[in-house]
Length: 328
Image 1 (cartoon, rainbow, N blue to C red):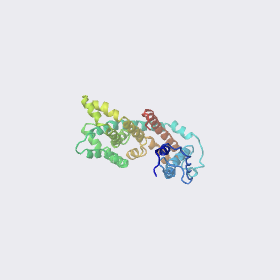
Image 2 (image 1 turned 90 degrees about the horizontal axis):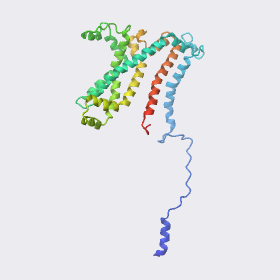
Image 3 (image 1 turned 180 degrees about the horizontal axis):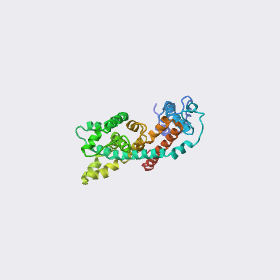
Image 4 (image 1 turned 180 degrees about the vertical axis):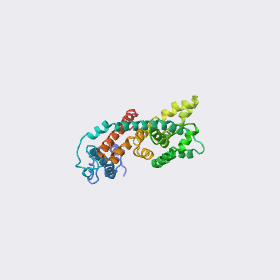
């Protein structure tokens, strides 16, 4: 049956008119058994194993070290760990008053800064050398990493053998008319430590700067070449600004790692270490496990942690302040 146009028009208009939205169905409440979730939909309880591991490995030992730092704990009171005499801040005051703690802090600071300063030009030049493509570049890149991947224990043992008075290191210096002497004792022990750690650690700066250089667009190098910029000008105006963040992070991590390095000084120089190379980690070890002053050693460990946190917090704050708007 054909509908007259006069009647069909109102019906079509009614169909074309937007319908009023009806009452929306209330969202079904989330079951309590499912719990809270990540934005991606994964439940938060998946983090529990990691959080438990962090608590057992980091939080509990840290709190225990802080507590022991307030106790007069030695080989005589070790069995009374939680009932040892409470002496408050006496361990901290004794550590600073004796002078050995400040001496070790100074040695560790000088050692870490000098080693990082020597690693910087070596790592930067190595990264520049392999930045451009050439035949065998992958092999050269791998060879540069050899000192870094060798365990610190092996590195220290080999250099301990080389730096003996009749070792190959003194023979090498004699070729240039330099008298080596006793590298592992006395005042020269500090410089032996700097030399060995520089040899072992410069590839870290190389890796950080290489990662930054790979992110620099080729167009910047081409534009600098068209402007007539030489090799030094390109490094100054293209490379260094492009790797600024990676380089600063690498310098910070390198300095903190050298400051907290225990294995290399301990194996290279032995214990007790020479006074000129008594770093803070070695001093803490000697105080705790050779002199059995566990309370004093724990207090020194807490001081070491605070010293390491200061530059790290400063860097993180500076990075946050200099981040571009919209960056996390």
